[in-house]
Amino acid sequence: MFQRFRRTRLNKTLRSLTRETTLSVNDFIYPLFVRSGEGIKTEVSSMPGVYQMSIDVILEECVELKSLGMNAIILFGIPDVKDSIGSDALCDHGIIASCVRAIKKAHPDMFVVTDLCFCEYTDHGHCGIIDHKHETVDNDATLEISASQALVHAKAGADMIAPSGMMDGIIQTLREAFDNGGYPNLPIMSYSTKFASAYYGPFRDVAESTPSFGDRGSYQMDPANRREAVAESISDELQGADILMVKPALAYLDIVREIKDNTSLPLAVYNVSGEYAMLKLAGKHGLIDYERVVMETMMSFKRAGADIIISYHAKEVAKMLKN
Image (cartoon, rainbow, N blue to C red; front, side, top):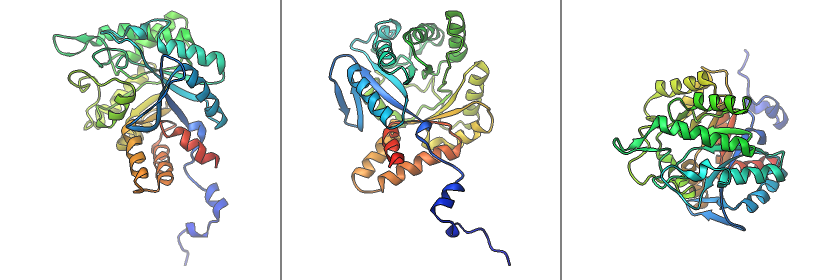
C-alpha cells in the first residue's frame, strides 16, 4: 500500500529544494526617518532599533544596508516646522527633497521610495488640508497639494512614489501630474488598501504625526470591510498604480490573498510599527524565540501573496538570511 509523502524522509538540501515559499533580501524595503541637523540618531522608545536620523547618518546607514545586500528604502520626513498645509513637503529644500538628493548623489544605486502624505508635516497631524466645517480632510484640496508634493519628490530624484494619504482619486491625480510634468515613467506604489488600524501607534511616535483631534477613520478603511478593501485596490489599479499594498499586514492576510487572486499587479504589504513592537517586546521578555517568530511572520506574508515586504525588521532579516 502506498503511503503519503513524508517530509521526514527529506534531508535539509531536499527540503530546501522542495520549499514552496522562499524569502530573500530582495523582497524587502526598509523604512527610514529623516530630520534636519547633523549627527542625529535618536532611538524611538516604543520601537527599539528604529531611529530618527539626520541626513549624514542616513548616508552611513545606506552603506550598512548595501553591505547586507539591501538597496531599497522608503523615506519619511520629520520637519522642524509644521503648519496647516505641510509647507515643508511642498518646497525643493524640504527635508525629504534634501535627503533624496543627498542619497542619490552618494549612493546612486540605492532605490529610494518616498512616502507621500502630509500627516508628518501638518500641525494638526492629519493627512491633508482640513475642512473645518466637517472636521475632516478636504479630499479635493489635498489632491491638489499632493500632486505638488509628488513633483517635488520626482525632481529631487525619487525612484518611486508611495502615496499613503488614501485620498479618493490620488492615483489618477499623480499619474496625470507625472505625465504632464515630464515624469511619465515614474512608478507609483499605492497604499491601496490601508485600514484605520490600532497597529499604527508606535509609528506616530517616530513620525511625530498623532492627530491633534479626531481620527483618520473618514479616509482610511474600516477593518471590518473585506469586499470594500479589495475594491479599493482594484480601483487604484484601474487608475494607473504600478504596485498595490495592504497595510497593516499581519491581521489582514486574508485580504492580501484575495487581492493577489484578483489582480496582476505586484503586491506589497506594510509590516507596521505595532506588529514590530509586539515582537520586540515579546522577544525582550523571553516569551518567544524572537528570530524564529520574525522569520515565520515574514514567510506568512510571502505565502499569503506579498511580492514586497516593507518592514522595520528588514535589516535584522537580512542579517539572519546572511548567516
